[in-house]
Length: 24
Image (tube, rainbow, N blue to C red):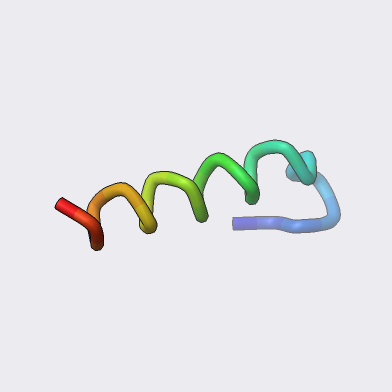
């Protein structure tokens, strides 16, 4: 994972996925 090359949106999406998985 490269934050320099990756977009901020990607990080937000990953965090959302984590939250979703944690909730379920």
